[in-house]
Length: 407
Image (cartoon, rainbow, N blue to C red):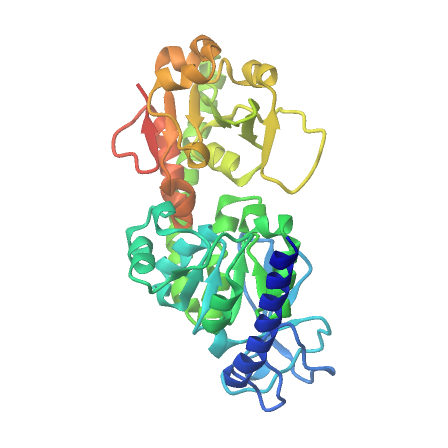
């Protein structure tokens, strides 16, 4: 054990020395500040000339300053200043801001937030990702699998234990972490200590699905392709807004019919869940972006009235079987989240997890589905996922992309 600790200490010492060497070759400004968590001192004499117009996202904001400087604020309280190519470091008067050099960022990014990979793919910026924390086998996107297998993207280990030497050797200009890094704060600290700035991707904290998708605009800023990001978002948002308008019109017609005939149908209830290894049932919280996707699609989330005693930022919640049975037994549709444990391939497999599933209305009527792996990884396809939800709510199981019907 003593020898192991000594070895680790030596490795960290080597990392620090490597940073010194790498720092000589990394982008520097005339002020001598290198990319990382350092900030150029002093107040900025530059003025804000514009701000990003965000329609749905609330977890970040972007302000544009004179001379091409950009201030990015993330709702975890962190500020970043993006320094344009060839410009001097300037913290824009934000004393604790992290300085990012656009040349460094656009040459090498370490992506530990796997859900963001698809957004880079849609922007045709996959070549900017030099390292990642997810293996090729764990990705459903063929282009990403190929890039990792070909060595264009290097797997550097799990997010909780990355290979720092490889990250340094890759001249990493920015590490993009998922909120899982909150469980391993020492990793973030170590990345910043060796000169790699860290930005935590908080799209999962967005209250609406389109807010989650709108994070593509932030990557557009970092990658210098804002126009492409805006166009992609607008196209996807239009799909959702068109469906919403159609369902609103249908609801209005049914409401008028109900007032005349005295009858009316309620929206089908949908339960989204998986069975955890310890026997609890994991469900999405009411108001979570995924539950809102089901509502946008014309359904009612089965756990919308669930009483949540502990309020935290997590989008999921473990409940006991008794509560799950009570809330989901009469749900019209069951969707098993197969992205966590591989899912189930049949209703029989679902009943093997608990024989009481045989009592469920959706099981008896054959309205049971499982997610495909690509559902969460293809984060750019939120509109298409909503359309899949809409299809099963309407009883149409043909041409599903992100769900599979169980028999």
